[in-house]
Amino acid sequence: MVFYDPTGERFGIPTFPFKLAPDGYATLRQLHARNLRPGGQSVAAQLMWRRGKRVAFLYRIDLALPKRTATAAQLAALDKANRAKRVCPACLQLKPYQIPRRTGACLDCTPGGVS
Image 1: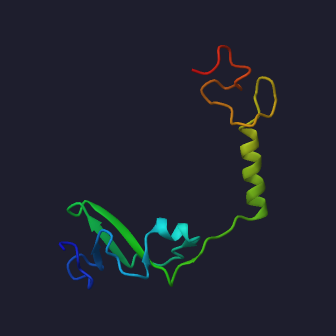
Image 2: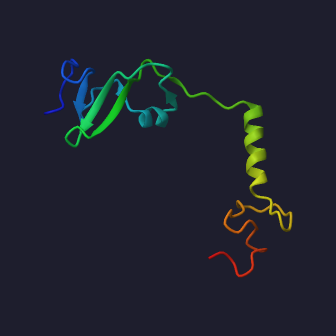
Image 3: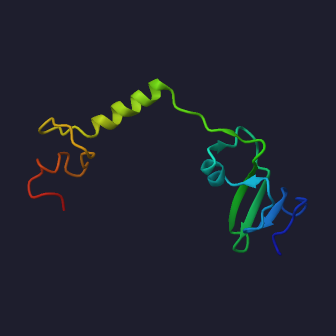
């Protein structure tokens, strides 16, 4: 138990070995899976493994806030940008896929297909 330091004396913040974090803490990825975000809180603890070369920061779940939702204007801007990536500049048709940047045209307009 090289990385077991629940008081934070050795590493500055409470530190736990890989897969041994106490309940009530979560990594960013685990927060996102629960539709939460840190919400401005600082790192509460950390996990360490591989001789200290790997670190994962932990946040308190009780202080986490719900993820923000995009506004209608933001969703409209994203839809417009994604739609522009699907219009072929050669034939001006809207395709169900993004136009490959390598060829600059849809698969129907690209001679010989995409390699």
